[in-house]
Length: 514
Image (cartoon, rainbow, N blue to C red; front, side):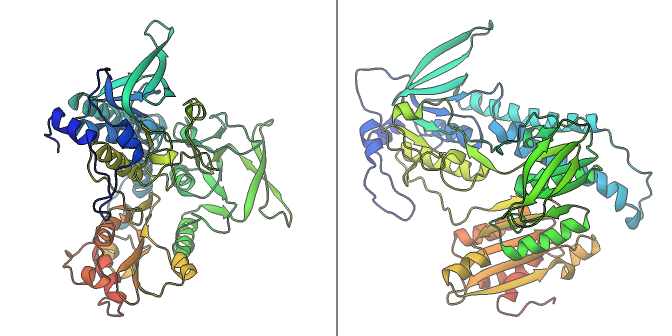
């Protein structure tokens, strides 16, 4: 509906039909019916105001504008794109890519007959490379706002009431200025913030969050990472490749808690071969910064056994993220939160307050940019009277270490716990021709299929470019494909994706190349 006229879009908004792809003619949601666009004498400046210009927020704004809704977006940062583009997904991938090339030049070129002198690290230039990439992406979002005629308002937002958003920002002369914007609908897309550890102060110099870890001006001799989840593993691997001695301290008994246990075990072995060290079932209880080096106190997670003290030049606290709702006025507006501080929403992303919706990291579900984007599209379409929908059973997850780790759907642990009968097909990259000739044989593809129907229930990949390959299996699952469907689909040779086909063949014990 990119070409829908404003009058038509308004008409849709007046009499919305709210349903998911499977609901058919679902009843209208109370919040939309009472607070949708209506022909009244009062003037409302906007059909929609989105609070937060991260991946969920700006995508929501773009889709709403495409559907003819007059849209504004409020952002407290000086630049658009949220955490992801500014201090998260994008800059980390730049450093991951650069550090991988640095290591490849130093360790792999000679094996391929490429003679070069030992590479020299210019960290300042590498950081500039990262910053230029961030700047390009941020400017891209700014262009999208202009292209779609979305008003961008910079400042801190507060919901004064349903239909009213107060924005406090700089007036350009160094003074604070507050303005009130009126709207038919509000979407909260404020994302998440770094989770803190009690008693450990983050100064972003020696004790850093992911934000500080992206901007270090020198390679730490010793880096202790608190938490062996996605963010910690990615940033820890960057600094290990650039020369740091890296140790992870993880409270759980395995890295990447929540992912498939076999994937966790195999990935840890691969990462240990690269020089990363892990202390599992352990917790950091204190960081003493009074000396030249940091003293990191580590104790058993369950309190039994002796503790130890680790020396560190830098400590990265990476224990997750928490929803960001500070200063939004949600309590005063009557918006309900759950026990973890997330905004409660229904199937249509509506809060308990008519006219207020929420998406992304601030609501329940995985804190992933692409999940927030899909929710942004869905809520915009719902507000315009269409059938917005997100399939939470098919949300891919990728860890951008080397090799990459990717998953979608159920893990074996979850299927066992639920008592679901399933078949497993697994294929190692050691048996893949392209991986073998490229010396990238670490890892495997694993497909889990229902024992009765053969429908794919989950897929997991550890290997080069796993983040790209998982998309094939996500599409297959979205359309309820069986492992047989993937197995009988012709894959190009020689490619890494042939391992996906072989894993599908292996579900019925008929893989060709092993």
